[in-house]
Image 1 (spheres, rainbow, N blue to C red):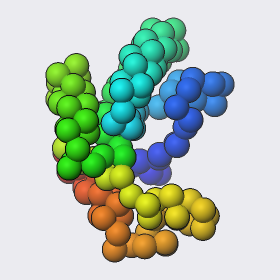
Image 2: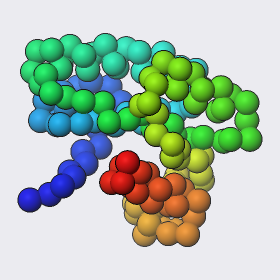
Image 3: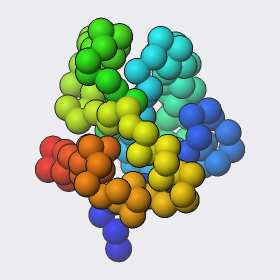
Length: 135
């Protein structure tokens, strides 16, 4: 028995993503903090709502996770604020910073904790895990 099972799905709705959403209790949407990601989020939410109505009425949005965030930029801060306005109480306090270590870990075919457990990105994922578990 597991308390949490995490299925990492592609950003588009394909048959695998649809099956994952049908089987899930909750879902998290990672969102890159860019303009086009916001447009894609609206379409994704509409598709998820259809899946919820047809197959899994108990499916719940656990939260929206801002990713590739650079808090030094106005754009990142504006997009996060926009997400908070459109999805009140659904945007995680934790965000995942833009990090070259994430890209390098993918190239090395390792997760961020294997690649560089002391990186800021690894710390972000630890914070996210704590937020999910502890609320």
